[in-house]
Each structure stands twice: as C-alpha cells, then as structure tokens.
Image (cartoon, helix red, strand yellow):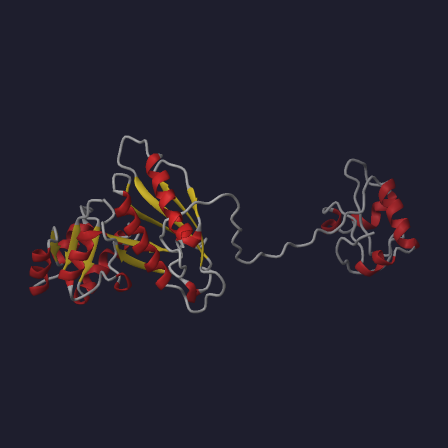
Length: 324
C-alpha cells in the first residue's frame, strides 16, 4: 500500500480503525464500519482512505484489514499524488533541417504571395534566462537600408533644440502643446524623441505612449540633447528589439520588395547588434536558433553557423565553403 496523507491519531471508533483511517462509499449508504469516518466530515468528504504514512508502509495486518473494510464499504485505497515541481526555464532543442541565411532569405521572398508588400521578419531564440534581471536584452539598431516602413517623427523640445529637430526633418515638433495634443487622443506619429528637460512634461502622457511603444527611452537613444542626430537616425530606419518572456527576439529586417543584398546587409547589422548585447552573466550558447519568415509566409529554420557573428562562416555563401 502507498499512503494518501498523514492523519492525526485519536481514540478508536466502532470500526476499529483507531482514528487513523477513514473512508467513504461513493454509492453506498453509510454502514457501521464508517461510523468513525463520518464523525470527521472533513476526512469523509475527501472520499479517500486516509492513513499514517509509516503505518501503511509496513504493510502489516492492520493495513490489510483496512483495505478489506474499504472494499466492503465500496471504497478504495487511493495513492497520494506527488506534487509536481516547478520546472526551470528550458529551451527546447531544434530538430529538422536548416538552411544558410542567404537561402532562407531567398525562400522567404519567393513565398511572399500576398497582395501587399510583406515584411521580412526574424525570430531569434537566445540562450538567456529572462526571469533574471541581469539577463535582459533590449536595444536598437540602425539598419543600412531601413525597415521599409513610413516613419513619422515627433520631437518634444523647445527653443534651439526644436529648431534643430525641424532642420533634421522631424514632421512634428512641440513642447507642452504637443503633450496636450497627445492627451486629446491625436497622435499621428510612429516615433517619439524628447530632450531631457522635456521629460517632466512627457511623463504626463506615459500611460498613452507606453502601451504603444512610443515612450521616449534613454536606453534606446530617444531621450537625448542631440535631437538632430536622433531624428536623422530614426528617418533612416531603426529597428527596436527586446527579448520577451520566452527569450525570443522578434524584429523586422526589411520588406519582400527589397533586393537580396539589402536584406543581407540588414540581417548582418541586426545580428551584430544582438550579439554585442550578450549579458555578462549568461552562460552557454547565446544565439540558439532562428527562423526567417514573411508576414503571411511560413518560418524557415536557419543554421546558426551562418548567423553567429563569432563564427568564421558568418553571412557567407555555402559555395564559398567548398572553395577553401
């Protein structure tokens, strides 16, 4: 027999269980043998045989008699379910065929059949534990050929900084008036930049900009006194990324209408940026595996030998391998 749970002892009842065993017949009327159990509603309600762990483990004659009485009453000895231990963060191993980065980009473009210009995306599995505060990965990278999306930049600045932002090409520039515009529900921009002295006003609209991913952040270079440079970088095409709770980074590296060379250069810049943000406390393989896909296309598994910047085969054609 295996124990269900430990039960407190006590004076024996008419059933001779000694207060250590209780059972209940699921479909039978109460019998004299169940008198002791029925005196304990909490135990009888469980519909299980409760016994001392050590007493059942001995398998003595009392344990056999308890099983016989339970069977006669229509009950049964129920084994205790072991509590499942919470598993730690685990990354599954990749199975199946993979291709090189150049082939994956070509296959993704060939599979783009939607009526609109699909984006080319990458899902990168990292070997970090996102539950640890010192292993978060978040950053921004300027792609050589941009993301292909229309960028509307709004700058929270005043005085000379506002004039610098307008000269750099910012479409929307303002200070407190721009804050009031956001509070009224009128946004109309896809990127927000602010000077440090304006953050006391921008904080009023944090609940509006934050969920939309528009809140200026000094870690992303969108809170800076050099607003002119930040505006030019945003208009060229920046890609923001961060590792989510499963340690996966999702990012767009271009459009299906881009040339192969443009996508390759964007992918190279993205992988270098992610590799440079490797946490110091991270152990083991940092870049685990990756998939490249379009908006409506299927994912294509990529061999990390061609995507790891620390590899000698990083972003190289497979034909070049046979030449050496």
